[in-house]
Amino acid sequence: MDLGLNGRVAIVTGGASNLGRAITLGLATEGARVVIADVDDEQARKVAAEAPHGTVVARHTDVTNWDSVAATVAFARGEMGGSVDVLVNCAGWTIDRLFMEKPRSEWEREIAIDTWGFINSVRAVLDPMIERGHGRIVSIGSDAGRIGEWREAVYSGTKASVIAMSKAIAREVGKYGITLNVVCPGLIPGSPETSGRESVWASEQSQIFTPEAREKAAHAYPLRRLGTPDDVVPAVLLLASDRASYITGQTISVSGGYTMI
Image 1 (cartoon, rainbow, N blue to C red):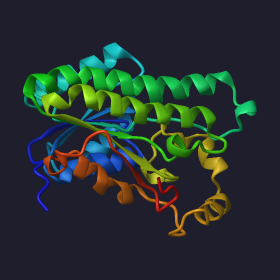
Image 2 (cartoon, rainbow, N blue to C red):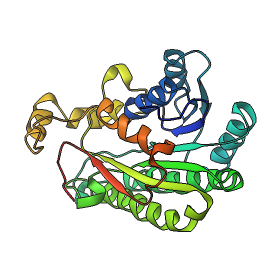
Image 3 (cartoon, helix red, strand yellow):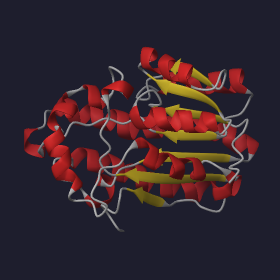
Image 4 (cartoon, helix red, strand yellow):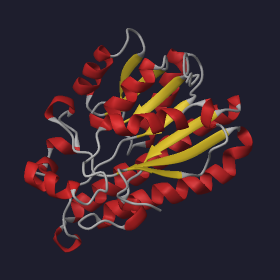
């Protein structure tokens, strides 16, 4: 199926590591021109080097900072062709802990990246999308935001907010030809080969999800395995394309049946 993404300009927040990396490369393979909006410059440059020549550019971006996000959108418009056709909100962060054992610094970082990162990024692209009368916004949520996951209380709340805000904004901007949808993965462990220094999987999270813990977690999935980034990318690409022009305000779980809502 031709998704019609050739020549489209896309911004992928958190596009340097793990799922973000896979989405970036997936878009580039479809012919899109992609800006990796990430704080990990070294890892972003590695991903850009993996992509077809000239299709991916790394741009230092702190999604928690409005000025940083706005500057990246201006860069994409100025250097990549004058428009922003696709935004994929993939920047996210958490460390699994019981709510009563979690330090406030981790709550604040989760809210800053997962909630404010969404707000900043969506608001920054809406003006050029409205001006053009076209836009696709795909946000990476989590099944935690659909069910409220154990050891992920605040993270569940931030991802639930992404789902709710996407629906509300979709109602507001649909008349401009802009769609907003959310893709919710289950547990997708990162790997050292695709994790930059800023990745959650370069932190304590990787120590929590030992091989034994991952094997145990897989038994909670009807398909009896954990997901990989490549499992999630096709859904993101479809929703980023005009093939999904009549889909908006929807939440799709790509999680091996972990939730069936």
